[in-house]
Amino acid sequence: MNKSVVFKIDGVEVTATPGQTIMEAADEAGIYIPRLCDVEGLDPQGSCRLCTVKVNGRSVSSCTQPVVDGSEVENNTLEIQCYRRDLVRMLFHEGNHLCPICEASGNCELQAMGYRLGISKATKFPYLQPVRPVDASHPDILLDTNRCIHCGRCIRASASVDGKHVFGYIGRGIHRRVGVNAENLAKTDALLEDKAIASETCPVGCIIQKRNGFCTPVGKREFDHEPIGSSIENS
Amino acid sequence: MKKKKLATVSLAGCFGCHMSLLDIDERILDLVELVEFDRSPINDIKKFTTRCDIGLIEGACCNEANVHTLIDFRKNCDILVGVGQCAIMGGLPVMRNAIMHSDDPLRECLDEAYLNSKYVYNPSNEIPNDPALPLLLDKVYTCPQVVKIDYQIPGCPPSGDMLWRALTALITGTHFQTSYEYELIKYD
Image 1 (cartoon, each protein chain N blue to C red):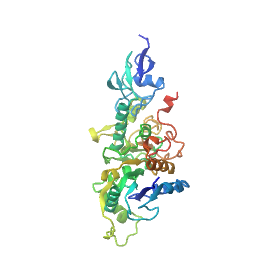
Image 2 (cartoon, rainbow over the protein chains, first blue to last red):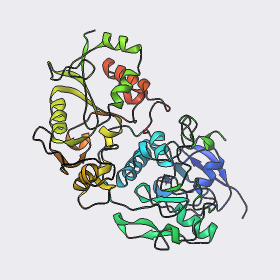
Image 3 (cartoon, each protein chain N blue to C red):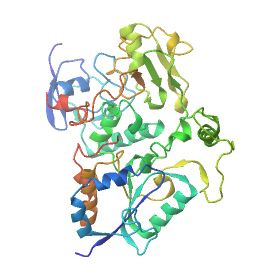
């Protein structure tokens, strides 16, 4: 039962333990699969679909799909990169992502994914410019849903790590957004120390710690010099 | 090599991208060896004197004059390049479209700017409505929403190095998007 699983990612042989997901095995092998809704320490959700790979020709999300012995996984192919580029473009277009005024700029995973995937060509999608609320009621925390990409990381962190269930989805389809389990954020039991509020939980600038903005100068921010995923590729 | 013709303009923007163009520093001497500026604030020529090879657009469209200027650029330039966040996705001007959370964002924006803000001194209590002022659009439109844009250079503003790299690639006919370096392209 403990026999290791051997499969290939883009022709490179990878050895994994049974039950591991493709993403976990790829991370250990130093192969980066782009992702936005998945982060270490939280259960995978498989919702952003950025980590989609093809296993024996079928598309699956690599953060939820267990490894299969002898399978052939396509990750860094032109077709899949084009899909990923379009997915990131659509995330940019669905929200109000104004990098020049965002406190998360330079540390934002969505922005970094744009850089990594080389999104610089003229757009083919319309900007939806949705009207979304900003909740600044909490003394230490700001919730700006204009920047939310619905990764659900705050929801999972609040439920499974903090045990508070502060965040949850409200609405459906294009109108879905992250909301809190009270009238506003100030009336919840959210604290600055919560995992859901930690800077590594929210990939964008949706959950902001107040009085902490723009504290890192340009050039020293997380993704200023190396693309997102470099730490996995260089490990 | 025959000099290429270059035109630039700022629509609803802050002129930061033009300032950034000046940040190419002494390389501007190399640039004028390669291009001849036509309609541009750099030389203060206000109307096209000839068809241009490259047009650089900074800023979004927030009034009808911006739209006319942009359409004029599209007609007179072979390659049109959107420069900076405002041209590409609206930048700061586009904030008046949605983030104000109003059913009538333009009206609320004008009321706040000229009537209601406690920092405004406006004895006539009127919103400027001189016929000479360009008509404001219902919302701010990005350049690709109005005309076809061939290339875009993201950044607020793009760095001088980025503009230099993109311009020299366009002038020499190489595909400049493949020549980006990671640290040159920034959305912020």
